[in-house]
Length: 127
Image (cartoon, rainbow, N blue to C red; front, side):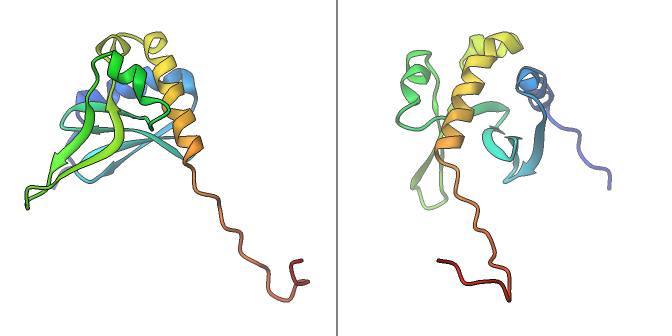
């Protein structure tokens, strides 16, 4: 069985994010996740591009008319995540997307989990 082609919005988002550097995209939960330097900062679901935004970063998204990522679970509960739809004008060009993508990366950095380092066996005890 042949793999389905990626939706056009995924390829368009990769073009929009190009000024950020190396972007990795992977399929997840029926959509696509975008990573820059292992920071998960954007996703595509239902052919909509969403950018990470916490309480400190969501006001500009609200002002631009963006919508929060949410879906209704089978039991009727509404589930929301800290991602907001990219403003329409940000979808026009990489230059227009850049401030929004940087805001999403800054948010991802604030919420990055610290990397746990494994202690080497036989080494001196940590002090």
